[in-house]
Length: 537
Image (tube, rainbow, N blue to C red; front, side, top):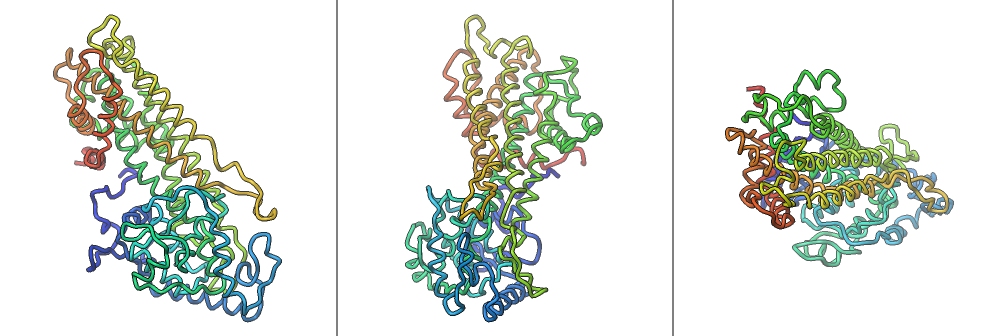
């Protein structure tokens, strides 16, 4: 099974949650198993109720009791009876701690920029609920239940897209706390409205924050966690279509089939190249690619190293997914309540260097994928390498064929490479010199996601160029049979883009190819073929 396999978009959210009797809702019980990326994806689609096991609720109450005991005994605890950041030296009297919570929250609703999408915001709320349920924050159960009720009602706080340094996403996630107390705005019933108005209309009670509750909600990396999970799910579709388009390119180029031999890639099993080679064999299964006599002893590295490059991306994706699962199932709170020991300890679990580094690395891996895709498209257009008419034009002479498209390929490639600049190495000292390092994990995830659009174009163009190569090759080899996934891409592309038989505008063709290949049905069909392993029949 590929490491990136997940329920396809046509699958119901019940793939990762229990069916509920009410209005198409599903219920996911936190604490029954480890949460995973698919759960975040399901939550982002809406209509989810959250339940928590009795054991976790007991742990949460135990943590709250410990905080209340520290407050009664006037033991200094960050954010409970002290100021925040540079104001840590300011002590707050026990009888003032609750009254100051709303001010503490609103002063830190300092994110800027366009709001996150409602899907991403749902995922953020889900991720914070999951983190609070671990019991490390000591949040009051009534406040926790308000957040859970908001998710069930699909009442989603409006969250700004900018403001996180990666030393928690505080100024963004404080929007969750603000909405719970009736401040700020929410998305509800296809409208954006004041949170207080929505809560009243839904019959939900405004949250009354106990000491530290505001910090408990805001001090976490829920934005990074949510965006990372959704980005990885989107990457899975990208990788599947890349495999199918590259397989079609191999058939159009007449590549040497031994590059996918299981014995060859197993001789030095770096990354996940063994699994990657198996994916390409699945994409080409059902055709005659592996039975044809190789036209060349070996091919350019962009063809020959398909398993190695794809395997590196799969390994980087696996590492990033591991970090997302850690965030999703861990307690990132500061201070951290250790319920079993009855202690409260300072913590830097909110800092996310591992997550940021993983996504910086993944962006570099995707850029390598892009480089190879561009090179394969150019090789297909080069007569002395492909054995096909120059620029894949059957006209010859001064015909441009597909060669002008190389400029768009180069521009898209540059855009993807730009997003490989590391975000995790930059940081500005803030909060009166206290927060002196940062990870920029939200930025690392965001710029990684910004690679997807140009990457989709590259894959669509490679498929379009490869389809032309297949048509030209079939003139001399009329029996050429395409593999299942490669053939699926060819069939869907040819439904909207006809063979190039004279010079014409290829930009509109690329747009049509993009629309056809990235339609949900196309992606689901290809993913289904890659998840089916003919070698095990």
